[in-house]
Amino acid sequence: MPDALIVQIADAMVDALNDASLSQSFTATRKNRPRFALADLADLTVTVAPRRMTTELSARDLTVTGDYLVDVGILKRFDDTGQAPDNDDTDPYLYLVEEIRNTLFGQRLAAGLGVVIGATTGDDLFDVEDLDTQQLFTAALTFTIREV
Image (cartoon, rainbow, N blue to C red):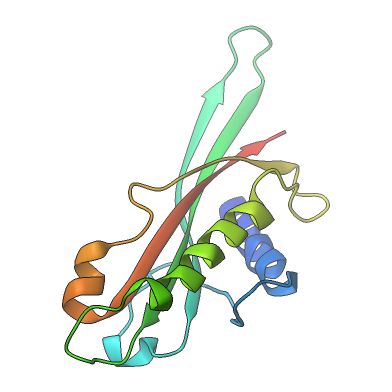
């Protein structure tokens, strides 16, 4: 059975991240349901998760186009020292978020898929509450991929 296009897109994003030379070492994975135990996040975790797809029909020429939303999550738990991690701890991961955005944005993914990453959003750069309460750096980028 062939994979859904959104799965192929997410897998291509995983491949692009794993092939990139970035400032932090990690192996990205795809998870349709990204759930983690806090204890498993001592190592940097980068996860690609299919999120949503929309389809439009052009009234002009009856062309069908689709947009696909895919999230990339970046998680790293710091040692519990009794206080929240400081800038020296988190700055490298903020840089990684930027690198991931720059690596994927504007890319045509995997030959034959006919899609390009055209936008990226994130509500907050990272979750301050997770950092304060769980010593956990949590960042998420949502990429919009359009059929071309």
